[in-house]
Image (cartoon, rainbow, N blue to C red; front, side, top):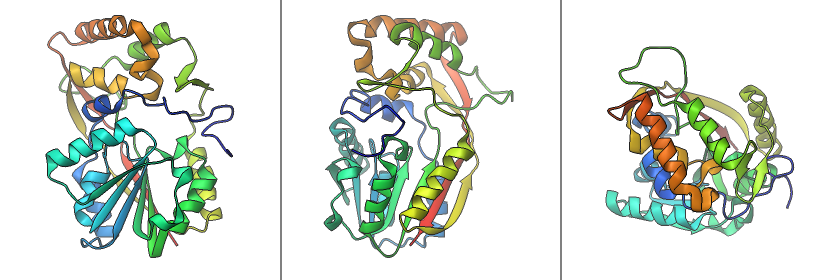
Length: 286
């Protein structure tokens, strides 16, 4: 199929099976400042079409949709799209179409689009192929926006917080106790991932340039401190591909009980705080 997300691993439909509802509750929403900054930088005025690739439950699709005439959220996980449609209905957003498709299979006649977005999704794809296909569905003057963010957990910077930070290291160890030492992803196992974000960014920049994109502009939005309930922290864990509910099988109740026990030890009243990392959006032009 071409380049997998990482050497030796290939996508399969179970990657986020059962995670959609947890994703909505457990991931911190994209801040309004990001949407406003993109609207200003791209001169969004309610015209044109948006394509959000790997949209999940509409985390970025829905905040951006009012800035376009029409929006399309595309994802390979039908459960994610069903949750996205529910979220759109609850918010009264009616200008979004949901397409259950892998980005690698994106048809050229789905466009043209004014803006294409990828938020926390490109690494799961055959990046070179997808970049070429996205270049093909953009209209004249169109742009691709690649959002770099971490929304399931905050950073550990030693700064004081209103409430205890979730015990993320202990949570990761608990997941390993139940699922083994290798990080799970769908039916496969991921190798240890490099932590050099700058290096990964350089690789992705080369992929975009090879596909015909250029003139990259970066927007950055500072992180903020958020308060979280124990239920939201539990959902943040189940929102991960490496801890998707289906991976635990008939031990899921035991895992959740152990997870909630960890959280009760860390914060008996069930309140937590996290400082979220900054969000960067790279805007690539054609």
